[in-house]
Amino acid sequence: MALPLCFFGHGWVSSAEMGLVLPSNLLAVQMWLPLPAIYGKSIDGPGWTISTLAFFYLLFPWFLRRYQGRTDAALNRSITMLGVVQAVVFFALFIGISIAMNPYPAAFWVAHASPLSRLPVFEMGVVAGLLVLRQGNAARDPTVRVMGVSNGQSRRWGIWVDWCAGIFAFLILAFSFLEIVAKIDSGGWWWMQGVFPFTLLQ
Image 1 (cartoon, rainbow, N blue to C red):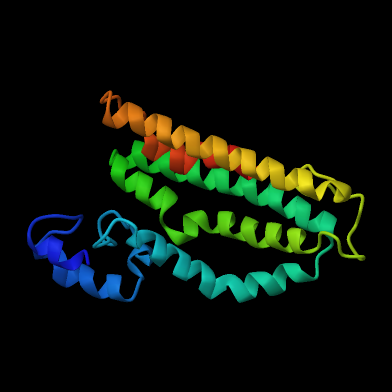
Image 2: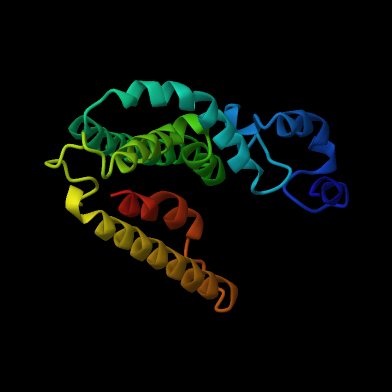
């Protein structure tokens, strides 16, 4: 659907770049390339997500085997460690590229869209999914608090997730209103993709 628009001067890719960009988009590997802002452009905006997730799901079976045999306590520790790794990787890439080369768009794309830079987030999801699947299981370790919630409070965990999702949705609407109606740039590209999700991942 986005392809014809590019030939009429709309979208993220010019018609002159199409020969280089089209093959990587059709194979959904555009974000796998170095410096995706330059070499890995997406014909349509959301296309980068498909490319990044395709990379993750190729590795998913390996991640699943890696974590399935671990205890609840070990999985819980893994989530914390992966959260720290992701924060360090994201901010180091963004700040490092910005200082070294001063291309903010390139720094942003490498730090938040490149599969390798966001791999710890996906890995956290695999680990959290395993912990949630173990809720109510007889073999579940009752001493381990999953994401701050004990085994007997699984309903509380669901409520907390709903509240966090609601707060996030409200902030997106509020900042979008500021940017569109009041013409105030709230830096959504920064807080939405970089800073705010780390608070929710807790």
